[in-house]
Image 1 (cartoon, rainbow, N blue to C red):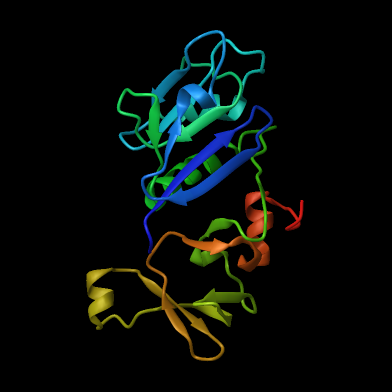
Image 2: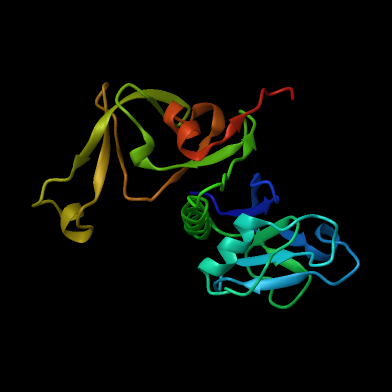
Length: 213
């Protein structure tokens, strides 16, 4: 998998905008979060930071506040749009998150957005990238690999006596109608939005935009 940098912006209304860019891309935080006061940085983990402008006119960001509490910042109230990045190392330039870090953040966001009245959604275009779990596919869905579609049948356990099963207990592989198989060891895989399974949109609440919007 090619190295990538992931950045997310989370609006007070629950809309999340994720940008997947090349490795080494950085975000200028002072430019992204201008305002009457310096922006605030919360280090959620060694690899995830949350940044926001505490003195702007925007309202409280309930999901970003819940996310901060999830990581231990229980007395923090986040206002306005929150920027979610990789480490900034106490500078104004934040790195992006790698794929695995972004997936962990997405899982945390999904957990905190289950609260009553909370709704997390995003808007993506057909050529943008989304992260799809192997378990998101249902029988009959197309699964794309190398630009070719294969019809998904099911996830299959590796034989207990094979080397893969010994090294990775519980790991499965994807089986398709044409006999195509692919390992399903990762928690999710980057996929073009136009090639994501139909159930992806219901699961995540994403809204699909036409290519020319």
